Image (spheres, rainbow, N blue to C red):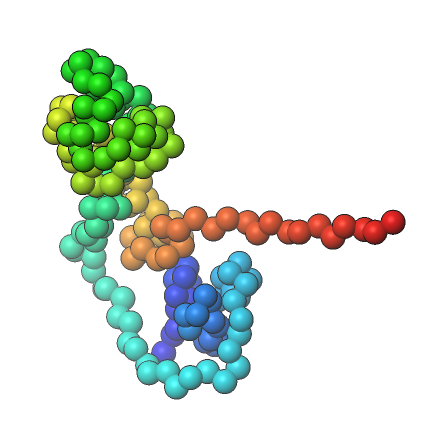
Length: 173
């Protein structure tokens, strides 16, 4: 029975168990190096879980709304322009949203990302659209170019892996 890397989804011929941030995972060699995982030699008893790959993908994979919708790039400027066009002060709009004026200023300056609830209220009060649909981009992420078929999303599709910062040793003179 084949095993799959729990981060990237690659097939793993011999499963190797690693610990990553307290979680026990089966990883391929590449993901183990990237995450700096610690190999567990005496693996805990693992139950075999059968992963069945769909033969026919007739139904479209549903992507949660939180991942399909994204704020537009210039959301802060858009909010500020709509607020001024409506003749609202920052303090008055902040009171209508039940947030502080300083937090609204940070949102307008693109320094803070508003919650879904605040975005909903802003769109309703200012009658603007602050979200864009990114489903098409996510579908491209979940398409396997080698097999020319769609595949399920993995953790690597939706997370950003930042390169590690290597500390330089100071030489003493």
